[in-house]
Length: 212
Image 1 (tube, rainbow, N blue to C red):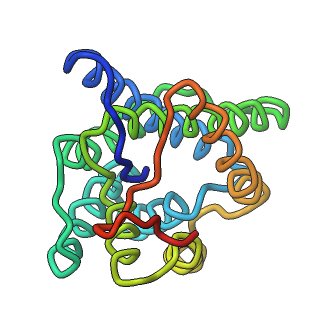
Image 2 (image 1 turned 180 degrees about the vertical axis):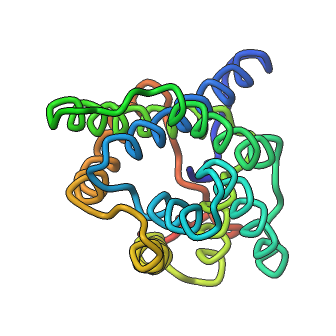
């Protein structure tokens, strides 16, 4: 989830509803993708691999990694918001709940249904979360911090995600066709949902936009 500068419309309760609704939907999307067994997105392949090695739930690892990533914000001079702290805590809790409650797919058709619902859920959740305007997620805060050092959005995201994907795969996280589907579909779907909740790219201090 990314930081954005928006003319945040609506009351505080409405923004909080978007924030926590987005976090619940995001955690549910993670649970769906993990349960599909077809391959996780890069960060969740990493979380799953660590969880398998440590004997912990994926949600617990998501929370722990989020907190550790925030430590990297300090040299990058990133400031967390209410949404950032909430992201660290609640996405992992909702992911664990979804994984526990969802039945195993049992058939490839249900696996694909889980995967497609996961990608749609995470794209919509990202849009809701950003439009609440209460701070970036810990992992995207790391990316925007690197942008301030002159790294482009695409290069920064690629370097981070290819690294966590490789480590996650080595640790035993599930990487497969679902990983590819997620990578291809998440951007266009987020842009589509962004028509309902307009997203803007954060400007630098001189008014220019970071390179993509």
